[in-house]
Length: 238
Ligand SMILES: NC(=O)c1ccc[n+]([C@@H]2O[C@H](COP(=O)([O-])OP(=O)(O)OC[C@H]3O[C@@H](n4cnc5c(N)ncnc54)[C@H](OP(=O)(O)O)[C@@H]3O)[C@@H](O)[C@H]2O)c1
Image (cartoon, rainbow, N blue to C red):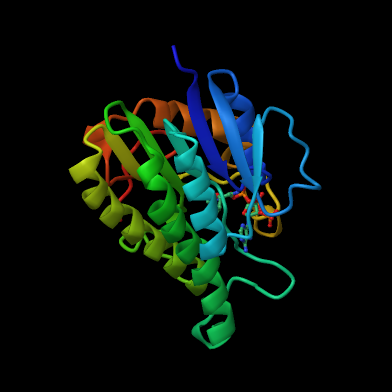
């Protein structure tokens, strides 16, 4: 029987790496990173380098198609909350064209391109899942605290891309589930500056979050397509 195949974008991140380690028990894992030279393969069987530009993603997708590759599980684990030049905004006056553009480029445009170029690599006649790591703060109806304009808005945009792609993919890939999932607050570079006040029992190790994400994703069927889940498998409101 053919070994199940998983494809993880951002496999060098905290969640990406932990997801690869768990999935490697049951899947041949292919991982995409921006810098393959500094990436230690570990459990990742095949490493692909990409700058996530449209050209690069199109080339990788075409190459995989030519090699007749298909993936039973695809996970986008890329994303940004902060870096040296980007901080989540506390007030409306903190937003800028540059910061909004960066949040959208990384948290929404890249995931949109991944759906465009890689959803066709799901098999048509067997179950498959394409999951994008989103964030509960991207839920519009759940937004009670405000702040974090760019991150929230870019994750809400990602959620809409996922929902819309799920509708389209259902026409051709009847057994596929295209979903967004909130991993829970997880120790990582992305979350580190913002978790000093997070209670210990609400801050999870990447291994724990990855295990829970894998449990949810591997339990999905086509009936679940177009939904936003949290790490426990509960459906979140958009
Ligand atoms: N950790 C949490 O508490 C938490 C909570 C809710 C949602 N999430 C979501 O979970 C996902 C993974 O987060 P994480 O905690 O694992 O963060 P992380 O360890 O910082 O990993 C982020 C990943 O995104 C990639 N990335 C960053 N900027 C990029 C760019 N411009 N182009 C392409 N890739 C880029 C990174 O690659 P490089 O190393 O090449 O930059 C890395 O692979 C994100 O979508 C995040 O929003 C996390």
